[in-house]
Length: 337
Ligand code: NAD
Ligand code: 89V
Image (cartoon, rainbow, N blue to C red; front, side):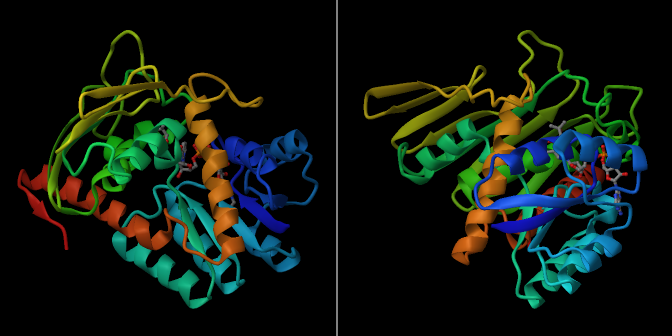
């Protein structure tokens, strides 16, 4: 059994703690938050008595195998480096870092300590998206040459996550990062990216609409994201996918309906995610993926292998985020290194 500590007892950490309770082979034995009310409320809710307001104090006092960093991005680098110095495996929330330089330093620190580092990049672990990725990777539609990966919603994300309204970067950094990661998982690494952004909601600081064109090696994709789209049914938080391959097509449509057409045959599946006992609609899709990605982390540590969404892998997704902002600012296409 791996013993872990969670740092940051905020909005999303509640899902992570439920997820850990459902994982085999790991448990959370201590928690930390510098906000005493959040710390106490979370400790009571999950029955965790070992509580700290200071992460360094916790890592010095507790006998741990890993830390789960559930804070927002400004604290990620110091906390990851602190965990590496303590010789711990690390799972860290997205966005992994504000800059690629920080992200590379974090990857280096944990690798130098001989431990595993995984980014909590959970969207590609949502069960309907996972089924689409596995179908494409398994050759169900031949060699893919086109994709559209789309997230369009008018859902109020700001009431639960108020920082999203005040950060100068919004949709690409917070949400687009997931959708770009799904594009990579489906179609592989990206050579060039062009992006256009705008802000529709006058009450927020950053962009809430982004449209991106990606050249993969051998395929093209459109990644489009919006939090300014008012439509019925509201599809939050579904990512819709269309992939064309040289022998067929795959569609993941609203309502978690997956259709694969190939060689004259059609396979239609209802991939509605389960409503876990602690989950609530419409978040249940994301909540299921939290438990799945955390189990993947535990399994990888046990089996001595690199997580699919490792820190090193996530450098490529973060590079797409940086490229998208650079492209939108310069109104030009950006080459990826
Ligand atoms: P939040 O502000 O609600 O919670 C963060 C908590 O961390 C706060 O309680 C704060 O006091 C604490 N904290 C910050 N720095 C700390 C430090 N150095 N030591 C101890 N405590 C510290 O934020 P949130 O909405 O829960 O988001 C957290 C992260 O999760 C963000 O990076 C966000 O992007 C990510 N997130 C991911 C998903 C997903 O599906 N993967 C969904 C929502 C949020
Ligand atoms: O997944 C996330 O990072 C969330 C949300 C789905 C609201 O964008 O912030």
